[in-house]
Amino acid sequence: MSAPVTDIDLRELARSRPVHFMGVTGAGMSALAELLLRSGGKVTGCDAHPGPAAAALRALGLEVAAGHDPAHVEDAAAVVVTAAVPPDHPELAAARAGGIPVLKRAQALGAVVNRGVVVAVAGTHGKTTTTAMTTAILAEAGLDPTGFVGGRMAAWNGGLRPGSDRLFVVEADEYDRSFLTLRPRIAVVTAVEADHLDVYGSLEAIEEAFLQFLAAVPADGLIAACVDDDGARRVLGAVRGARTLGYGLSRAAELRATNVEPHGRGSRFRVEEGGTPLTELTLRLPGLHNVRNALGALAAARAAGAAVEAAQRALATFEGVDRRFQELGQAGGVVFVDDYAHHPTEITATLAAARAAYPGRRIVAVFQPHLYTRTRDFADAFGRALAGADVAWVTDIYPAREAPIPGVTGELVARAVEAAGGSEVHYHADRGSLAEALAAALEPGDVCITLGAGNIDETGRETLALLGGSAAAGAREQR
Image (cartoon, rainbow, N blue to C red; front, side, top):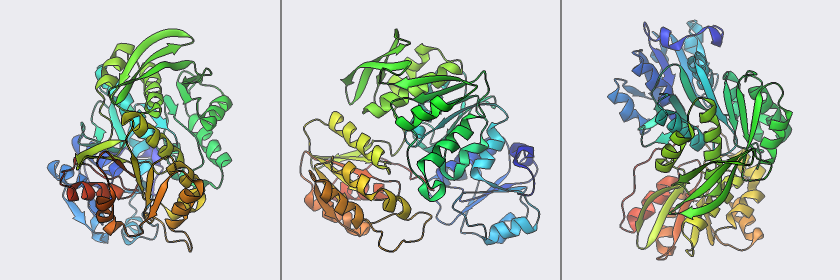
């Protein structure tokens, strides 16, 4: 960094000279770039593999350059990079040589949103959906929030809900301790589990990072955490200073969902606060994990000034985020669903939601492990989670930012499914030919769920097309 992050006003900088984004079409990066563009700022951007967000950015006047070149930063006021960009990258070297401030995406986000009231949603699972739900409630309440999510909302045509510069709802990512750049007045913790062990090394270190994040919440703010989750409950119990609220389905929750019952593909439930009836909510999204997400959103939105009635209206019509139990289409009697689940707990929750949403149907899970380190660390747990499907297909690892680790392949997960028992398992290393194999194996009545944070959604769309269907549009997140 050429200047302290707290001293940088990106929107002010962008009024005179462009802020350059490296990897601009990733979900989080494109949302930041869009905000600057909508604020009248100057933005340039490049991407080695421009994603679907490129078209939306072009419509706002940003021409996305394919590939990287040190010349891109010559006139830049600042450069924003993803955590995946190596520190010795030629564009970064050129920026530093020219004295141009370089910010990670998380630092840039903090530099923008910390000038207003921040509602930050953190957690190992559920933070994207909870952030989007919170934004929807506050918008319904007329508070005009600016919302940032790490996925794509069809209703927003991206990861940004543009609103006022007074209230921001932000997905707070724990990877690389990114969320420590935020200064929230209201914070939600959905879950705290072992993940990103390549960065943290242990669950204890992860919990310590969450406590550092929550230490920024002022005494007159609110910290809400899901007490159904052991890690979130421990973290909440260790908080000192700010007001706290536990939510969930267990009796330990102050804000509690009761009488949860199916309602279409989703659910209807009552909400109690301190044992007193508060409201009744209806969700279109399936699964108890989404009931918990809705409770977290309700807690945050009320603390930010929304009435319960706004939550009722917003959640009843909330359609969800792309790649979160997203129905892609139907063909040959098979329903195709895609989900971003890339952690064992997420897979367990998604398969349980599928059982509830499609009772009596055969569940076929198609899993692409994400990251070599995560596969190495959680292979057995992935196996136990996938054993909850009737049939499990496993393909090889989507590496993202990582180099291969000898002996670590998707076959580790397939063997773990076999060892867990209860599920027919197939290992098909080549994702490129997986759709043909699936199309031949699927039967009428099946529900085929693609699972993973890589490009496994493409397999779902390809298989659907082979069976004669057409898929809904969607965008893949990039990390």
